Image 1 (spheres, protein in one colour):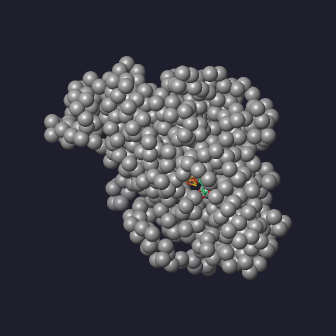
Image 2 (spheres, rainbow, N blue to C red):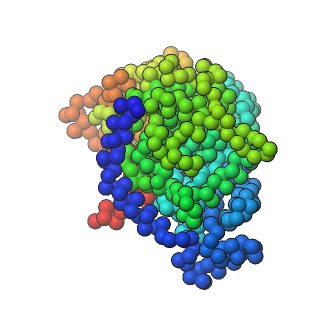
Image 3 (tube, rainbow, N blue to C red):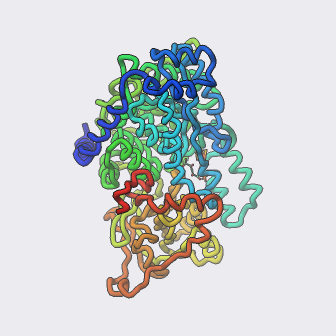
Length: 609
Ligand SMILES: O=C(O)C(=O)C[C@H](O)[C@H](O)COP(=O)(O)O
Ligand code: SF4
């Protein structure tokens, strides 16, 4: 076992001792005896199966058959989630074939960050993760279930479903992916047309044509953003069937995997002799395994918040120093856009999850003494799924990369580290993803140009005000201010400045998308400007230093000058109304800082006294 990975793991175990023990005791209490519907009154039960057919009713009336909850984030807005429309019936039919019952317990909302990117709706996005967690809990609170299947893929949805299902950690829970769309216009070509549009070289028609060729059918978008990072992390944590993350939708293998997942969850309930609740699968070692895999592949920076919130839901306390130290120990093994030009389908063709598990396991970079939905340890995850007589079987996976331009090796990685750094200094703490940068490190010391919302930057860019070495500061974007939107729409103009040869970087208390990458960005700055962070005192022209070698994020203004400055105050009235934003004021009021996961769900009344 890699020494650094093990040291971080032991530190997390030690830090989480009390909270993890309390969590395990909680889920043991919840476990109860026999089917959970057994504690319901006749009235509760009758309501619970009133709409079922005769067979299901008699099965549910008897306490011998497992009842499986289906929680789905289906909607037509996310290309990734559209395939889920047909899954509940597939699951119900399969579960019935093996003598149990499945009920659609509830739906959860899902926002497409691609649709809302650069628009007011994006200010609901991060908080929607917590709404999804709550909606999953509402679904499971019927307490009719002995197991659950979670249907979710994209950015905030999988983290939300993980948090929600961990609050029912006594239930065996299987996550069910639907897979990426087939490859369309390469992401790099799409990004080039965007920059040409930002420069006024092409019109909307050309831009829309490129975007539509890139995002062209059902399935997850093919860049390695937060959605695909979710799949990889969830499988690494043993909550997917082996190799199921990236099988394309609408294929026979995809449906066979959904049927196999439906059978598998019925084998894990407390009614049998292989009880495996999600609260026992998600432990300190599986969380570390997820972070290691994220780092080894240059995954989404959003997980420096999501995985902290997910771990917290299982009584496990993780922080950015854990991410940073794991990043120092983990080599970068893949080049998938934005960290390269390949897409997620190319990653699969080069070796995919089976090869990733093999390489990380053989190098001792992940813990193999973990529980999964298919048993103890991760050896089965070095296999890959294939069809045999219409059903899925697993065969040995690749032992080496089929394309070393996309998938390298631990012996000869693309970078010796995972390309995720924590910066700190008088401006606070921030994260920066270097795996997608042209140079392995970012060292910039330049004058600040300060904006208080992302839309102000357009005019400055078009006027040429930014045609220089500069550090663009976009503040009052934090969780408490306006819900911490992704500022991914800044990538094309900042990319143009970079291509013009200027040394530019972004510093913000907002966040970027998993698909962002080429422009150095110190994001998630905490404390945020709205809550007294020094960002609020930065003035255009101040010198800021950002250095991933030293980890510095420094405002070079003397203390006396800063003491005389009055912090800027942003009028956020307009950002707090319209597009439903007025409904999220309570969440903004209790949301934790970025390093605590920017989460509203662990707020306790005691905090209010
Ligand atoms: O990371 C993910 O999974 C995403 O959903 C990506 C972003 O949120 C973008 O908004 C969608 O990518 P673009 O088409 O470049 O805007
Ligand atoms: S990957 Fe992102 S852009 Fe694509 S469907 Fe999912 S949320 Fe939308």
